[in-house]
Amino acid sequence: MSVLAIDLGGIDVVNRGYVSRFVSAVWWFGLLVGACGVSLAQPSVTGKIGSITGFSPQLTLNLVLTNSGSSPASSIDLSGITFKVLNGTGSVAFTPPAPAFPLGLPSLGAGASETVPVNVTLTGVVQRFSITESGTLTDGSNNTFSFSIGQTVIPPVATKTLSLSMGTLTYPAQNVNTTSAAQSVTISSIGTAAVSLSPIAPPSGDYAISANTCGATLAAGTNCLVSITFTPTATGTRTGTLSIADDTTGSPQTVNLTGLGQTQLLTLSTNLLTYSAQNVSSTSPAQSVTISNTGTATVNLIAIPAPTGDFAISANNCGGTLAAGSNCSVSITFNPGAIGTRTGTFTIASNATNGPFAVNLSGVGQTKLLTFSTNLLTYPGQLLNTTSAAQAVTISSTGNTRKLNSHPAPRAIGPRLSPSRTTHQARPTSSTWWERASP
Image (cartoon, rainbow, N blue to C red):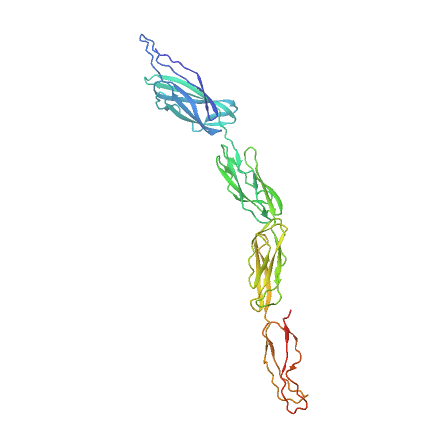
């Protein structure tokens, strides 16, 4: 005679944060009452939800059936699986297609397990439900026993959560009406479900989106990037906001934007230096150019090279930087290498927004040279107190500018002749000339 005993003891298991209560059905078979009093060990089956994949409303319950007895089970047949909503107003059913019952499982040795995936769909509000498996167990002696075991399931709910890499983007000082380098915000989906993103609108203020890799959805565990530039339209602190609308709690997400608008402006006292006529190979007095910073930020004076042409820097009190509101000066001289108009350029390289700068240089080179057509005029004999015919001396300037101060009357050289003399002697004369350059 054999007797079947069922143990409805409970086992609590915590898996992925969900508590399942497992009811084990244990069959004791083969209690043979006889003269010999022999007892035979029998197989038994227990079940648990090993894991749950997916999130409400569609789940896969990985049902683990284990032969917890001390002898093999030649077969296990599931005749049905049922569901019951314990908390909530919704329902639970197999995700189509439903499995065909009976569902035969392979033989299980003592302590062996078999996992059966059960796909379910939740409709409406389901906070907790039970799953019950029923079937038959056959031992090695071809004895068959019925079992019914069950578990409680708290369905995991997908979460939608966004995380921003930065809550504030701060830009360094930027010249007005110029565009900064881009800064980026990484948007990450750190929940367990995809997040729906609305189209990202342009930021407010002096800011613009330069790149955007975000689409309409952001899958769980992924991220996208939004890059933003700053173009100040005025000096001082400039603020704005980037807004990201989505279907998560706390939408919209916002990023504060702040930057400083500045001006880096240089002004020159003149853009032309004109020098008076200067003798070739001689140096003129210096003329100066004043460089003033009329902006709101320091200007870097990158280079002040020597002027081109016949011009040179004689003094320079400018450093590498020029603070806002300050000035410096550069003095330049002219040393013509040839006659005629001589030109050059003086340049200033800086990071000012209204640069680069150039000062035109101009001067005239000259020489002071006079030549005479002859250095001797010889007159024939001439009666006293009478006037000879004129002879001419041509005076030429081989320079480019001359002014003669005076040309006094020639003077006689040697003794005068006495009127009583009957023999006349020629009287040599000379003339002296003064000249100066034109101003």
